[in-house]
Amino acid sequence: MVVPLASTVVVFVNASHVAGRTAGHVVTHALAATPNVSDFLVVIDLFLVKATTLIAALGPCVLFINAGDGHGLALSRWLEMRDLDDLKTRVVSVIDLEVAVTFAEVLVGLSRPSAVFEVGTGEAVVIAAPTL
Image 1 (cartoon, rainbow, N blue to C red):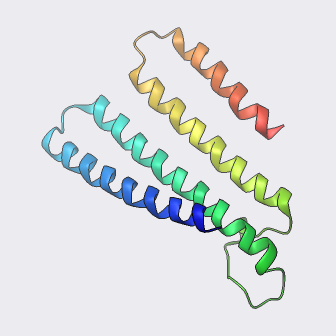
Image 2 (spheres, rainbow, N blue to C red):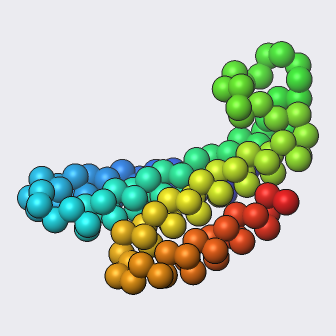
Protein backbone atom coordinates (compact mmCIF):
# COMPACT_ATOMS: atom_id res chain seq x y z
CA MET A 1 0.00 0.00 0.00
CA VAL A 2 2.94 2.33 0.65
CA VAL A 3 4.50 1.90 -2.81
CA PRO A 4 1.36 2.85 -4.79
CA LEU A 5 0.79 5.81 -2.47
CA ALA A 6 4.39 6.99 -2.93
CA SER A 7 3.99 6.48 -6.69
CA THR A 8 0.86 8.62 -6.59
CA VAL A 9 2.78 11.47 -4.95
CA VAL A 10 5.64 11.19 -7.47
CA VAL A 11 3.27 11.14 -10.45
CA PHE A 12 1.29 14.07 -9.01
CA VAL A 13 4.46 16.17 -8.60
CA ASN A 14 5.58 15.27 -12.12
CA ALA A 15 2.14 16.01 -13.60
CA SER A 16 2.04 19.37 -11.81
CA HIS A 17 5.48 20.24 -13.17
CA VAL A 18 4.49 19.26 -16.72
CA ALA A 19 1.21 21.20 -16.40
CA GLY A 20 3.07 24.33 -15.32
CA ARG A 21 5.61 23.96 -18.11
CA THR A 22 2.81 23.39 -20.63
CA ALA A 23 0.90 26.44 -19.45
CA GLY A 24 4.06 28.52 -19.84
CA HIS A 25 4.56 27.13 -23.35
CA VAL A 26 0.97 27.98 -24.31
CA VAL A 27 1.43 31.56 -23.11
CA THR A 28 4.64 32.03 -25.09
CA HIS A 29 3.58 30.04 -28.19
CA ALA A 30 -0.16 30.63 -28.36
CA LEU A 31 -0.44 30.09 -32.12
CA ALA A 32 1.11 26.60 -32.15
CA ALA A 33 -2.16 24.73 -31.72
CA THR A 34 -1.09 21.12 -32.42
CA PRO A 35 1.81 20.98 -29.93
CA ASN A 36 -0.30 22.75 -27.31
CA VAL A 37 -3.17 20.26 -27.63
CA SER A 38 -0.74 17.37 -27.53
CA ASP A 39 0.98 18.75 -24.43
CA PHE A 40 -2.33 19.18 -22.60
CA LEU A 41 -3.31 15.62 -23.49
CA VAL A 42 -0.05 14.45 -21.91
CA VAL A 43 -0.97 16.38 -18.74
CA ILE A 44 -4.43 14.78 -18.68
CA ASP A 45 -2.83 11.37 -19.15
CA LEU A 46 -0.44 11.96 -16.24
CA PHE A 47 -3.30 12.93 -13.94
CA LEU A 48 -5.19 9.78 -14.99
CA VAL A 49 -2.10 7.71 -14.14
CA LYS A 50 -2.14 9.45 -10.75
CA ALA A 51 -5.79 8.50 -10.30
CA THR A 52 -4.99 4.88 -11.15
CA THR A 53 -2.15 4.69 -8.64
CA LEU A 54 -4.33 6.36 -6.01
CA ILE A 55 -7.09 3.80 -6.56
CA ALA A 56 -4.51 1.01 -6.34
CA ALA A 57 -3.21 2.50 -3.07
CA LEU A 58 -6.62 3.05 -1.47
CA GLY A 59 -8.18 -0.19 -2.74
CA PRO A 60 -6.61 -2.59 -0.24
CA CYS A 61 -7.25 -0.13 2.57
CA VAL A 62 -10.91 0.11 1.64
CA LEU A 63 -11.26 -3.64 1.18
CA PHE A 64 -9.37 -4.90 4.22
CA ILE A 65 -8.97 -2.14 6.79
CA ASN A 66 -12.13 -0.16 6.15
CA ALA A 67 -14.24 -3.32 5.88
CA GLY A 68 -17.74 -2.04 6.40
CA ASP A 69 -17.50 -0.89 10.02
CA GLY A 70 -19.05 2.46 9.11
CA HIS A 71 -16.22 4.44 10.75
CA GLY A 72 -13.60 4.36 7.99
CA LEU A 73 -12.76 6.54 5.02
CA ALA A 74 -15.59 8.51 3.46
CA LEU A 75 -15.29 7.80 -0.26
CA SER A 76 -17.15 8.95 -3.34
CA ARG A 77 -19.87 6.57 -4.39
CA TRP A 78 -18.01 5.52 -7.58
CA LEU A 79 -14.98 4.54 -5.47
CA GLU A 80 -16.84 2.36 -2.96
CA MET A 81 -15.57 -1.21 -3.16
CA ARG A 82 -16.97 -4.35 -1.58
CA ASP A 83 -14.62 -6.94 -3.08
CA LEU A 84 -11.55 -7.39 -5.25
CA ASP A 85 -13.66 -7.43 -8.43
CA ASP A 86 -14.88 -3.90 -7.61
CA LEU A 87 -11.25 -2.78 -7.23
CA LYS A 88 -10.30 -4.37 -10.56
CA THR A 89 -13.31 -2.75 -12.24
CA ARG A 90 -12.27 0.70 -10.99
CA VAL A 91 -8.67 0.27 -12.14
CA VAL A 92 -9.68 -1.11 -15.57
CA SER A 93 -12.13 1.75 -16.16
CA VAL A 94 -9.45 4.37 -15.47
CA ILE A 95 -6.96 2.48 -17.67
CA ASP A 96 -9.56 2.46 -20.47
CA LEU A 97 -9.84 6.22 -20.12
CA GLU A 98 -6.05 6.53 -20.26
CA VAL A 99 -5.99 4.49 -23.48
CA ALA A 100 -8.63 6.80 -24.98
CA VAL A 101 -6.56 9.88 -24.07
CA THR A 102 -3.47 8.24 -25.56
CA PHE A 103 -5.49 7.61 -28.73
CA ALA A 104 -6.34 11.32 -28.87
CA GLU A 105 -2.63 12.15 -28.43
CA VAL A 106 -1.76 9.90 -31.37
CA LEU A 107 -4.54 11.39 -33.51
CA VAL A 108 -3.14 14.89 -33.04
CA GLY A 109 0.19 13.77 -34.45
CA LEU A 110 -1.07 11.64 -37.35
CA SER A 111 -0.18 12.83 -40.82
CA ARG A 112 -1.97 10.05 -42.72
CA PRO A 113 -5.80 9.90 -42.39
CA SER A 114 -5.89 6.16 -43.13
CA ALA A 115 -3.82 5.56 -40.00
CA VAL A 116 -6.78 6.59 -37.84
CA PHE A 117 -8.49 3.26 -38.54
CA GLU A 118 -5.31 1.28 -37.86
CA VAL A 119 -4.59 3.03 -34.58
CA GLY A 120 -8.25 3.00 -33.57
CA THR A 121 -8.53 -0.74 -34.14
CA GLY A 122 -5.46 -1.39 -32.00
CA GLU A 123 -6.79 0.84 -29.23
CA ALA A 124 -10.18 -0.91 -29.36
CA VAL A 125 -8.51 -4.30 -28.88
CA VAL A 126 -6.50 -2.95 -25.94
CA ILE A 127 -9.67 -1.59 -24.30
CA ALA A 128 -11.83 -4.66 -25.05
CA ALA A 129 -9.40 -7.27 -23.74
CA PRO A 130 -9.36 -6.30 -20.03
CA THR A 131 -12.98 -5.15 -20.10
CA LEU A 132 -14.27 -8.50 -21.31
